Length: 155
Image (tube, rainbow, N blue to C red; front, side):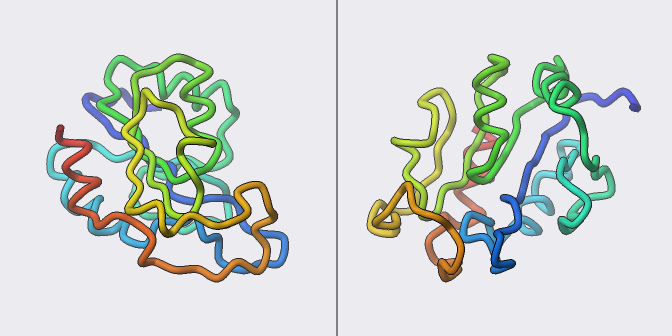
């Protein structure tokens, strides 16, 4: 692993659903965010084999220990994630707060107060917060625009 100064860790996708429908937790405007932030930070994407690669430095199928080490790296500026495993791991390892992109899941239930939890509006939250995801229609309108994510990262 090459030494990196001042990097941002991204976990852009939630797991593929059992019925193979597009996961409603997936943020639609990653390229816009990356384009802005890559001028000032090295972007490292973590994920699994079948996910879309967004940046050159895409690290696939990493053990949780390695991801935890990335979260605790002194050169980490911040991390950005959708509602997936990363905010939970970040909370457990006690790393610096990150930016979490919420759509139809309630950050008051599934999020952590230390993070910058970006929710467009509570009116988009799904009725059954604990229900299965299969068959849920994808709607990109439930997410904050890229400008809000960039603002949260740049502080």
